[in-house]
Image 1 (spheres, rainbow, N blue to C red):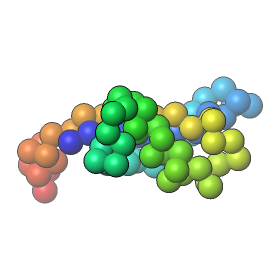
Image 2 (image 1 turned 60 degrees about the vertical axis):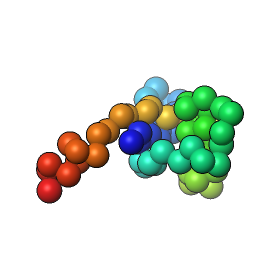
Image 3 (image 1 turned 30 degrees about the vertical axis):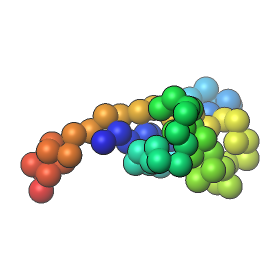
Image 4 (image 1 turned 90 degrees about the vertical axis):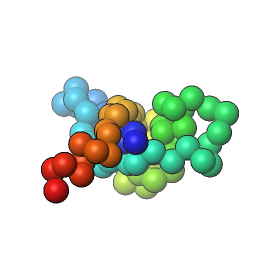
Length: 72
């Protein structure tokens, strides 16, 4: 399973602010790369929360389901 950390660029402070986390959804965006589909989905989901949709960027994080379940 792949999760994406979604950030927004803060040009004044020269850093990225964490907006949220998304879980992989590749069914609806076949034919594009993992980064392209994640970024498109992030812009659709978190676009209304930021002033500039072009300032959104993602960082993929691969997480194994087994590791997640061990923590419970």
